[in-house]
Image (cartoon, rainbow, N blue to C red; front, side):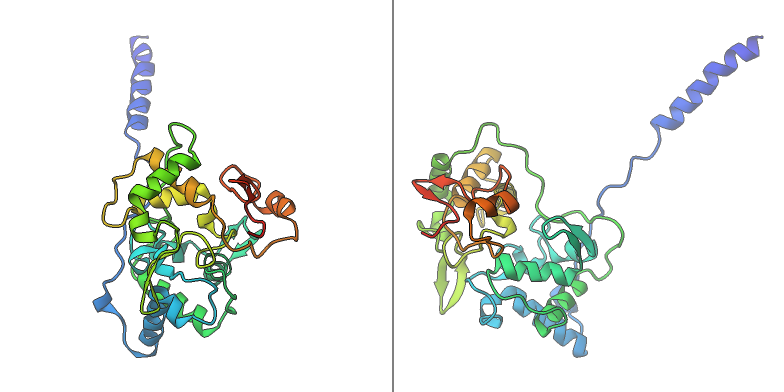
Length: 291
């Protein structure tokens, strides 16, 4: 009887011990892309190099395709290498994947097409075109040696906590003037030298359109907090990041390519969330309507 009485507690303790020491589920894996010095040779290397050039200097190599003054590397820093800045090496292996934005499973090439349509406010290169193939080759090479089938640490932008208090346009304007205007200009139109973009425009005709991911205050705040100000990352608080993102995304910019001839209808279909200012009045102007 004593053995039976002791057996149950011992079994319970054994199970408890095995449960408490169970390995936690694996998290995102760390990865470092190959250095530029490891660029391959031959025809494939030529394609990779062309892709890198397009990525770094989109305004030069795709001048007739894009409709603004942004390079891919303006939002994907260090030519798509920097962790926490939507690096290409973490994105490439994540596709094919379903995207609610267009309601279909997207290949990586299709994802690139979306970047041209929205972030670059331009024409959409065909799948299999030299432009798309070169960018695919570059992203593929950056993933050399990366594990597949699991998320990589550093993908996208780090998730940002909600602001301690509601973000405001006025507070964001002050944050912008103190921390952003030096590079991007008081008017948000960026800086240029010899026809090339030095610091990108954050609104207006030279910037991304209303359909771009950066047009979401949530995305913009996460990017800013993780990557800005340039050369002084980490100096903006969570609150300041939300405030300045609200200010930036409350400015005029090119129309959403999916525009349905009605700002209200376009907002209802594509921007009906609290992170989009599209279709909302700011300073007496309806954002998304003609200036």
